Image (cartoon, rainbow, N blue to C red; front, side, top):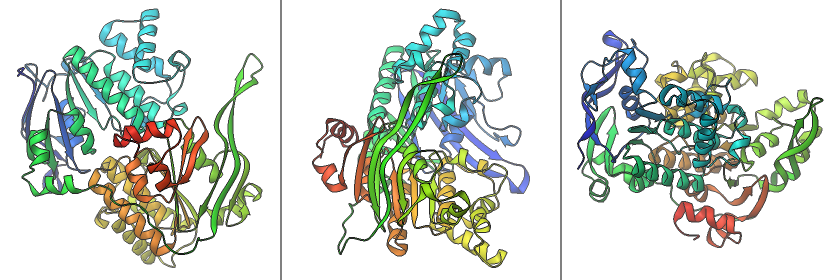
Length: 534
């Protein structure tokens, strides 16, 4: 066993001062050796990310404090280290992949400049050599045609592509320690497998240690040598992965391992009427070149897609990042321009004027992929969830609206007492639940769910799946469920469409597609998710 490169001892973190201080982490300790992978697992808010940010001293001081603890990295005490020391360590000897790439990347700089900054600061690499290295890194993490994407800004990439750029930045300086905070959250299953293989290969090549934070227990089995299970700011169980997973000792670990989205959809009775229908739907983005910016070609984000979604049913939409899933959802709500027919309850949405469309917005809601980017940082949770109630004049009094807000927060597993807090005070998974509550509070007929469980740990995933099933049965909701997590899709979807490069390559009843996929692409997706095409 190699000597530890990272030793964390009796680490505690509090936010605030005095009697109102919140203890986020208490008495945490672990070691990590070169070439070893240690996983931190637990539910949202358990202290995983706080632990990771503490290592690099990235918590918001002075509001965040360390009453006790030591963080020793290769003989260097990081807790209270001077800025010069931290600048050398951050991004150089310790790389970090953050949970939410859109908020971690600079929206004003292209990706080549952002990766190049790491190379210049820590490797002294500039010019053609840096450019070649950037292309190599982007290729390693699976960005197609990387030489053509150097000038791309973060908003021009899909969620999965932005996550891959973050991984490329973290690996640019070939660090001794990589902290990966949910590194595959936004990635589809095939790219997830590629990224995990890449991380393992790079780890073996450079002897890199890895602190791997995830809510996906299947990834822990695959990636980690040892695991620490966290809840309520404490490490409640730790040890070799095989020992902890095969014979968990703590009741929390047992509950965590037992929590998985279960079951398959089974329907009886007659077929309900069609709620949403798309025919030959296209979303083409023009590519303009030359001095006069003439349109020379198109990016076919959605290309001739047709389907029907019935009342009280769920249509799953799966495919790799950039396949057009999210663009399809936005087009259906008329949030991006499209051609073709979109009919909701028999009315062609493309023929309805904006003023007449507003009342329909209540019946068609969306949960976006990036919860932090879709929540206003200036509004409290109560204001965010209640904004739709005011816009659509639901509730006669503030007290009645508050009651609806409390009910929505309770349904998604959030403490109603947190209604007056702000988005930055919640974990990633908790923010996703706020976004779901905002949509559900209006009791819509159609809910477009764009990766609604991607930021949630497995126990909350199972709760959200059960919640969505319950709401669907009670209110007859229809879901368009966009996801790369095929286990969740299998538990929810009646029908399934598989997208690739903007087109539908396979569709049909979900049970049929999962059990007997015909297209090689679908077979590859299922093999990456389940290890088999069945």
